[in-house]
Image (cartoon, rainbow, N blue to C red; front, side, top):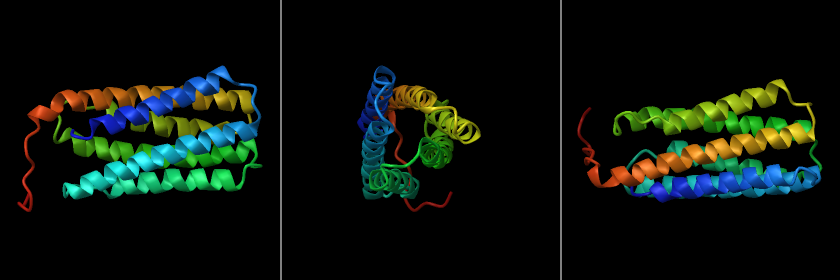
Length: 184
């Protein structure tokens, strides 16, 4: 809960990315590649920063590291191969969305043990997986459709992360201390 603001920042970046993608549908695929790479890099770095903070608190951190490394790796591959076709980019994005969705659902299940009735992170995970599946099923529908699909996903994902971050912010003062080293 102490790091609620990282989720809000990730959500804001996702929404900004989504709005830019909707507002500027005419740029070349290269511009989309660069914007997507920047978003992936920032998102991956934020996930790793969160993981480091969790590790310092002696809490589970590895799923966030995996998510962060995946995001940064996809960003690097995207920058190294800017001539990637729209179909290949769809598959890269789909792979990231599927990995991220699974990790977010896993984190939401663990979070439910601490926060009663929490579901925003789980919804973000479901949205990520749904986006990944749709992207795999319909890769060749055109650059404009790809931009709209990515923009819609990014805005939804961002709203859900902001909602979770704000919920954690209001919850942080009431957080019970988890026992350390005690058997479950």
